[in-house]
Image (tube, rainbow, N blue to C red; front, side, top):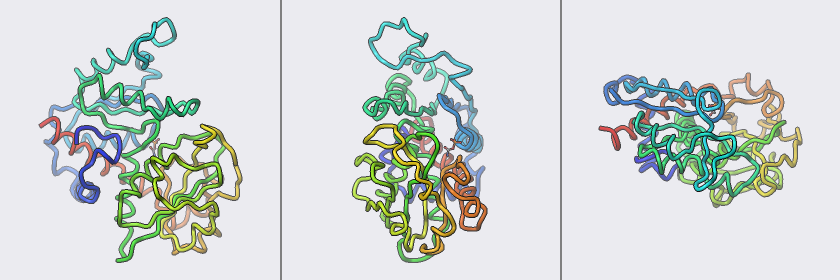
Length: 319
Ligand code: CP
């Protein structure tokens, strides 16, 4: 694995999940793999789970970790090539990424989309500029369009939970929100579910919230949430802003919030969310506080997802 930016960076999904689950059983078995190696984690945006779980994962492998919050600790970076830098950004990514490549063995990046211009956001300029100029493996800590560490933890969680022989039905269900949110988590989840041939996958959302086809691919789409949830084994709840009316909230219909009543037609479905979640806007208290919710287990699995990926990056690039 040269970089970890999307599912296309991995060789075999089930092998990576096996590796993550083996770290869950034995977190310190590779404690010398990352000795004298440093992970730099650069946050252009806030984080709780990704920040902490990835640091824990790196420490389990014996790595040093340095965290940089660019809004407080670093210079604002200019990402465009060939510009006259007489604006607000005093440092260019060409130097900044190259310098970080001198300091770090793996460069982790979190960079959200602006939600103003789809072409700009979907070009993934920030992560691509770091890949180009750092000269080091780049680990996505959530980019403008994808959140692969989250998706790997999601697959791990479904694999752990599912004990039956048949394929589980997994439904990604849009939910209301008060703010316009990125499409990175649903794009990424769809990408991973479409690749994983051990599940049946349905996406439920109101009209106007179609994900970019590059990610939803051939997934079944249902605009009727109740019909989509019928016989579901897993319900992944998530808000996202519109792609076609880029970055806009078209519908804040509270009827799409997940409630206990909505789960009645499911196969006693387990409820997932990447967190943070706004209670009683996205998912009702009665669901989050019930045994149906596996959101905390899902967040816990972020450590093992990150550890499996860091282990692959170290083995391929640093040892
Ligand atoms: N799910 C997730 O990435 O959480 P954070 O934004 O807190 O890292």
